[in-house]
Structure formats: C-alpha cells, structure tokens
Length: 361
Image (cartoon, rainbow, N blue to C red; front, side, top):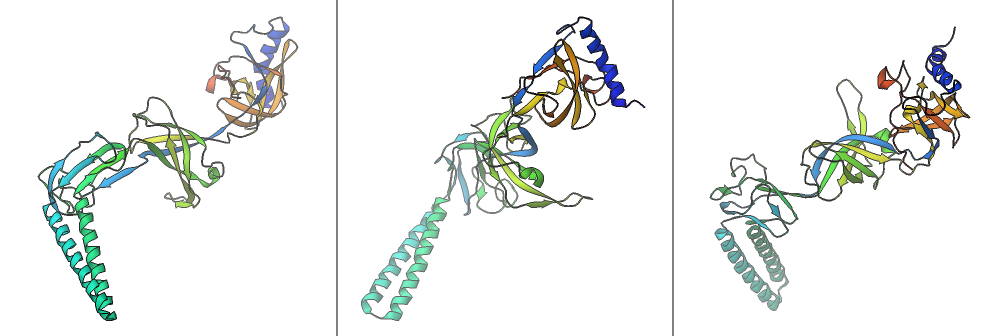
C-alpha cells in the first residue's frame, strides 16, 4: 500500500514540478516566492495571564477621631510628595502634645534631682518614669502629624472616602465605608503586571528579561522587564486536578503609560531564550507538508527545478521554524501559494504558503 504521506506528496507537488519541467521556471506560478535559508535567532516566548497594578500604592487613613476640616483632592488628581490630601480638626491633638511635653519636662527634672541625690533606687525609678513620659510625647506628636494626610509619592488619587464635616478616624466612620477601607488612596503613575509561572517554564525565565504586555485598554503593546521572579513555589490546585507548583512573576512596564488601569487583566509575553544560538530556519509557510511535529517536506530549488526534500523540524517562533536536518545554509526554498484546508493548505498536516515575515537576525 502506498503511504498516505506519499500520496499527498504526489497530489500536491507533482503538478508544481511538472510546471517547472515544462518551462514554467522560477516565478512562473502566481504568487510564487523564494527564501534563501540562513541562520536566525528563534526567541521562544512564554505567555502568561496577569493583572495590572501600580508599582506603589498608599492607603492613607486618619488614626485619631476628628471632624474632617479639609478634603483637598478628588479622584484622578495628580499629586506630588508633600501634597496635603485631607485634614481633621487637630485641636485636641495639639492640646495632648502640650500636656505630654509638660509631663516629660517635669519627669526630666525629677530625674536630674534624683541624680543629684545619689540614691540609685531613686535614679532608676525617675529614669524609667521619664522614659514613659518621653514615649507618650512621641506618640502624641505622631498622632498630631497624622491629623494631616500627605502624599509621599508622585502619583494619582485613586479613591477618596471622606467628606468635609464628617467624622473620621474610626472604623467605618467615613461615608459608611467598610472597616479597614482607606480614607484616601494614591497610586503611582508607573505600573507593573503580576502573574504566576509554572515550574516547567520557570527554568527558562530570569530577572532582566524583556517582555511585551497587551491589555484591552492599551492601544499599543507595552514593553517591560521582568523585575521579580519567585524562588519559592506556591501550590495551586484546581478541582479534580492534582496541585501544581507556580512561582510569582512581576513585569515592570516602561515609562508611565496613560492608557492602562490598575486591576485590569493583561497578557504577558516574556521573550525567553533571547540569547539562544542562531539556527537554520525557514518560514512556516514554506512547508509543503508536515506529517508530525518534527517531520515535513519543502521544495528546494536545485538548478531550475523545485525538488521535494524531507526536513527534520525543531522549535517554532514568530512564523519561523527551525530545520535541524535536510537543508544547508544558502539553499533556496520555493514557496507556492495554496488554497483549501486549515491555514490555506490542501489536506491534513499540509501547511499553506502565507506572506513571509522578515526573519529576525
């Protein structure tokens, strides 16, 4: 019995060879092109789903109860370090600082008197008393500072949960918010994408690798760099499946993109193996037939005739596929346009010709 692959070869390639023998010659077929085999670098990408997040986020809340006296920003406002966002009435807090300072001064005087007395027990007691009062003063001063919410980063206001005249500083007091919700949230203008990578792909990745990020809100693909890659596996489990190990990964986007939003889904393509050695490769559409992942057939220009040639295939990337056997550097592969079947090819496992991309060197 004639193998199916041979029958396909006869059906598909014989008319092309016959055309050449009858004087058709190079370029005689409509859309026929040639590709000279050369060594190219095939960077294998790792594609991951992720979530866009700001590189910095401030969740600021009043820690002492008080009436809100000022809300200086709205959602979307730009802020810089030192920008005052909101304040509460600090009258009681200022009084607490004054009282704490007076008590600390008095404790210091008592400590000095004890030292002059020379009584070790009194000295130790007064030293401890002064330390307690000094800590109370420090706490009172910090509480007064927190009566004013101030940004410490260059960013954008993402949430405002307080209004002037309302009580703040107690859980859920501001606008009926859930306990624990921040009064004002500020995020940076720089963004990152967080994702998880499986154990098998983890070995191909490293910090510093380039990445391309796409998001529905971004008009163009965004470039970034892998800035964090976990070394401790996190177990993830799906119902009905055994648990699998994954590692956290962070890609920091270049610049300050204005068309991405925190919390949005994104797709990361890490350009792994970018340092791989160049290999012989041809456009995928040059394959006249492909009967497996590693076996195929191309037409090689030898003299004036396109000759069917078996090839052994390797990795595939960006429309190019590695050829590990069957071709030499400098060989000319003939690409014929074909119609029908998946991808434009006739019959199963046969790859159709498409406009070839310029190979990456």
